[in-house]
Length: 256
Image 1: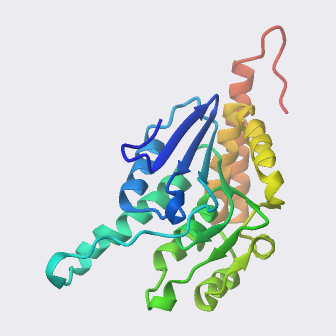
Image 2: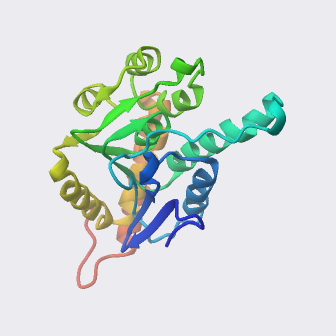
């Protein structure tokens, strides 16, 4: 399946849903229509889906955002209009990915610039080829990349975010791993095998336990240690209760 423009390919394989940015000719630059298509797909997520994978076709993951078409006649759009055209689609996309009740995996190769860096960051797991390059270059055009920063601010250390934004220098995959932006880096020839193995592991994990872990990861970082412990106890109890309510065929359920 695909979006009407074929710019976002949608593939379902068992419990794995894969969304592929499909504009390899321009590095998979993302526009508002593509962002909306992804948000709509995620909003209709099948309850049987256990993992969502985001990737890019061709040599690059996502080389950034395609700028909206300027208004005719050189008219200057209002701040509210710019918010609707520029800010709202990107923020809705980041929020939709973060809010998913199942794990998300970004598989990154080549360029991941601007929005591409943000998309890798908002996914729960980001694995990359050793040829991946990350950059937030917006300040070169005197554009404050606050939308990308909003996606990253709760995902990477402040020092990492500051370096990417103010330094504007490309960051190699191995350095992005050390800086906390990535989960793992693999040789380019090995990335696909590792991605499929990871997706198979997640796709075969029990749905209740998987969603319980995702819920804890979404909520716990903002809590005090005491509140995080209380949340852990509550989620574990609820998940284990579901296991006892639905024992495997031919045996008794045991907590694990």
